[in-house]
Image 1 (cartoon, helix red, strand yellow):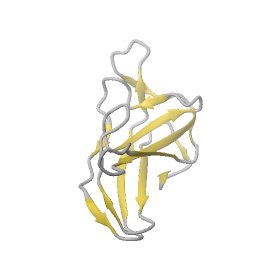
Image 2 (spheres, rainbow, N blue to C red):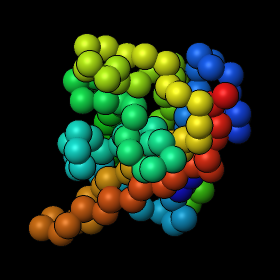
Image 3 (spheres, rainbow, N blue to C red):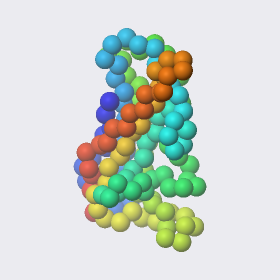
Length: 133
């Protein structure tokens, strides 16, 4: 699994494209299941240097994807891509404002069934840090 951004550095206001990919290492039945904060099988979030989630923020639409159940062959992939507009929650909570300069990371999370009655697999993968100047 991987999570990457399309650059390591961004000017203020430039969109940050984030991609998270899951690759099957062997043939398997992929059954996505909802999990985590949003109850989504696959999510993308952005955190600041302290590890605090800055996007999406509470009340903003989350990056939730519901991939279809499928049989994955060895080497096949499932991918989720989203663009962050560098908006973070304003201190007064009424909307977004430009993210401050600093270091951030994208986190892609994948959740899938381990079988009937089993706890689902839930794997989060961080991108390399990227900088907003």
